[in-house]
Image (tube, rainbow, N blue to C red; front, side, top):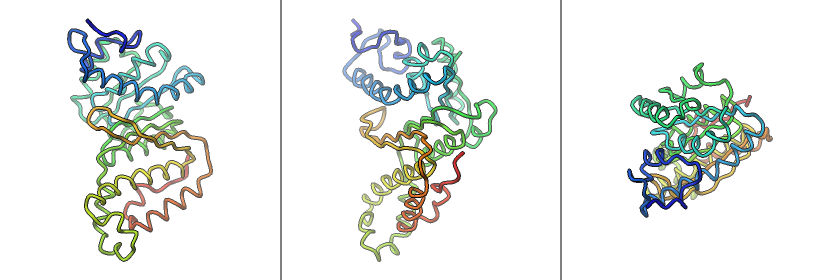
Length: 278
């Protein structure tokens, strides 16, 4: 017998089966119950943002970059858009065509197609595509590997998103750049932070997110960083939530430039460099 206590009222049982949270006969085992709690944990971070947006206007827009199988998009649509923002639109952007097609088919099957769209687009294409609105309310990127998170940030800045929600992973580019210049950097004791290979990887991942936060602040966003525990593949993840508040930009830009100089990351200046926000 299904333990209904763990499933929210009105939630699509068919969707939970498709996400392998429920078994085919509608049951929850220990592993799937844990996964369901993780889903709710992530939703709890995003729900207040959606509530704020829909209070301002009914036709809110959310773009999920690197959507993959669109688990996040489907959960958000089922738990929020379906009943509380029926005029809203949720877009999943993914470069693997087979995943785009399967998401479209699932949306049709669940009756979500009126409010969900899935497009096979690169970030550069999505910025200029007329299939997406010129301005969006919220941009999400869950487990966007390496530079995909930065692509999502670029899209969000171009689209003047009010909220940006990021869960980065697999960050290697900064670590590779640190390793490249390690011999020169070791003239300073600061380089002890990344002298050993395991520290290079860990410090590289941390400084990547620090630079991202400064970049967002240099565009007028207020940034909150916390920990998101458990979701799909990873036990721990950093959750970055940014809200556009047109805050002063100069100090964050100066700190960003100084960090890039200090760490010998000048080659990545264009990736993290701020520009005039719209």
